[in-house]
Image 1 (cartoon, rainbow, N blue to C red):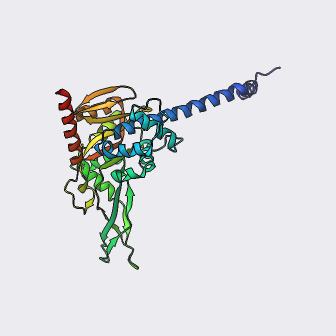
Image 2 (cartoon, helix red, strand yellow):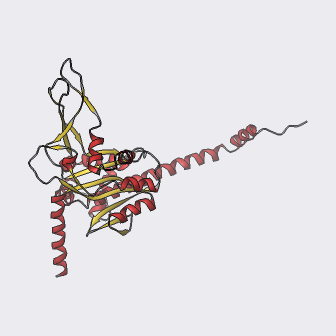
Image 3 (cartoon, one colour):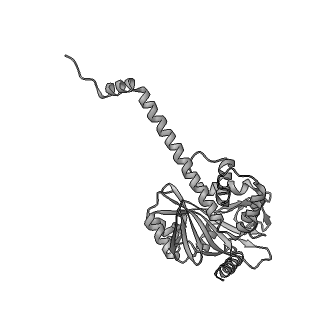
Amino acid sequence: MDMEPSNDQEVEEIDETYPDDADSETEDEADESISNIKATIGSAIAMIIKSLWKLGAFLSDLLQDYVREVPESDSEDETDPQNFFYDYLLNDLNLPHSLEGNVTRDLFAKIVEHIPRWNSHFEVYSVAKKICNRCKMNLEYPFAHSYGLNIVADSLRVLKAAFMDFTFETILKVIRIHSKMLCNKEGCGKQNYVDSVILKLPSVFTIALEWENNETGEEIFETASILETEIDITAMYKYEGDSTFTKYRLASMVCLCGDRYNCVAYERNRWVRYLSSETQVIGDWDDVLSMFRNLNIRPEILFYENAMQRDHMFIAQGSEESEEEE
């Protein structure tokens, strides 16, 4: 009596009968995946540029440096400096081939490192200092270089839940000093919490948020509600410089919405959302938080500009608008 083929046999027969179709589907899926990754990375670069355009430091001398550094552009629309800048970076940067980790943080670092003269506006050089708790020796470790702080988003919620009265600045300080360093005196080896000291203030202080979990809109809202639009860098670092202007204001953010990036920026006394080809007026900060929750938008990198510098930019903008009205 003839037996019907098993499921395994059927699968084998199908695979043997249509090998070209299966290979074609696999290739199509791979091409689609690569295309999606490129589109997402292109979106991230465009919104990083848009966010930088909202910084006074960038618009003053960084843009001038860029024009001198890159005298020619492959862009068809050379009248738009943002397109000019986008095409240049897209062609010259060594772009990632995956979307692992915080894409915007990594791309931003590549961008500022690509033109070294820009680094000083974003760089934070800190040195760890401490008097050892055991041997009382003065400890000083080598300078550490960064472009700000990298924070796991979930850690903000955890610390806020444990310490309800902690401000955003206090939470950042707790996260930053969590690591210990060994006393380097021979025979001691005591692990000490250390103070991070900075001697020079950056023009722009960046905070990158790493979203490790598939946060819901409510969890995104809880995290973003901890953020503050003004911070004092001396609450996180010990500052030994001579400037009294240590406050920074949130100027712009690069945010992820689905698989595309947005820029959320503060301009003309309200928050605005920039998408690929349109602009939406959001309103005040509470409206921004509501938007994060309702649309599941995750802020990935925040640009805080020195308050004095930012005030000068707004004064200049106000003067230009008055002249236009006249």
